[in-house]
Image (cartoon, rainbow, N blue to C red; front, side):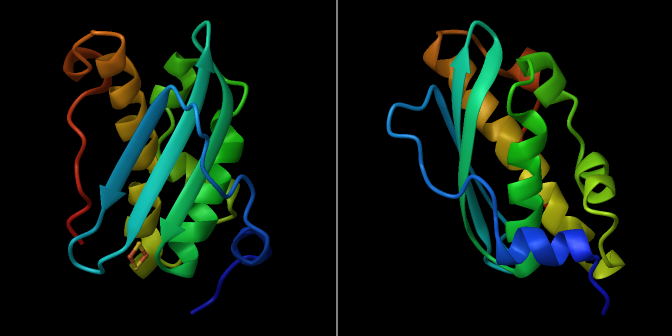
Length: 138
Ligand code: FES
């Protein structure tokens, strides 16, 4: 199995690890099959994601994709963060082996889960905006 230099870098030196005490949205997503869990914390100000941190108990690809996902959404609007796909995360990492693609889905869904929590806290039904949060099934 071959990992790109970017994947190795984000695995060895993950960006934005930790939690945000006063987060505006917290998401958690797991993959029942591999048992990996990803937690995502977002600080949101005026519709802009001003900070993002994560904690991942999982494989190297899960760590690398959550690291890259936080980098990609920081400073972006909620709308842009909602458009973040796992494919975009994989592309930003210069690819992932096929058997590891599902790990990037965990990162995509962790972001959506945190945004869903953000809307719930505002008293807004997140479903029409964020859609259903899906646990990756692979
Ligand atoms: Fe579980 Fe990668 S093997 S997320």
